[in-house]
Amino acid sequence: DGGITQSPKYLFRKEGQNVTLSCEQNLNHDAMYWYRQDPGQGLRLIYYSQIVNDFQKGDIAEGYSVSREKKESFPLTVTSAQKNPTAFYLCASNTGLAGGTDTQYFGPGTRLTVL
Amino acid sequence: GDSVTQMEGPVTLSEEAFLTINCTYTATGYPSLFWYVQYPGEGLQLLLKATKADDKGSNKGFEATYRKETTSFHLEKGSVQVSDSAVYFCALRRGNTGGFKTIFGAGTRLFVKA
Image 1 (cartoon, rainbow over the protein chains, first blue to last red):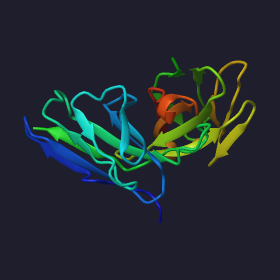
Image 2: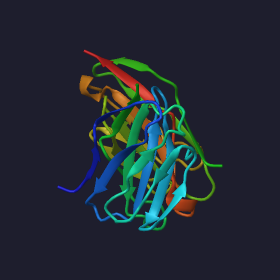
Image 3: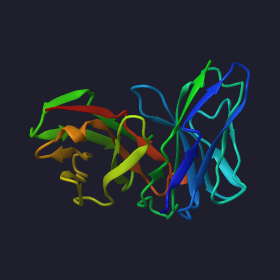
Image 4: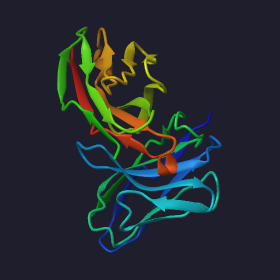
């Protein structure tokens, strides 16, 4: 079955540590995204990538970094510069077809907690 | 800039009641409109979508019609079930927006009582 996998499901980080969240898709999608969701709030875009080896900052990129070395993979690193990283992180992808009509698919999410 | 506004929740209904969740948007051009559903502890799932004016999206008894004249995309269901309890997000995307970003509303939490 095609889909998006995220790992781990739960992640605990100590103050000052960098952590990397995994996102893999086998949908053959060109575009991939990382969102942050805080309790009772909507989704905020962290980074997005329309093609391999290219990515752009979203609305809240400070304290985060990404890479896109393979079409299938878009890992997110939460650095120690992110002052309030405790949140639910969602990865998504879509074909990236012109017109914006294509559906965006989401992974199951990773819940990050800073201890 | 583009934006999506949803009615604030939570919305609490009894089983078999009629559901409406209001959604209005601001965007230039002709965006595609989406409704997503999120169950506790999970990612978002597409519920339905409409890509041009007057289109009606439908799925699992839910419906929404793309109304360009009122810039709205209200979600409706004739008879809700306990299993419909979730958070619902309205969203839009324009193809000529940089990076094809999706703009999400804040979400509306629905509780359905048996």
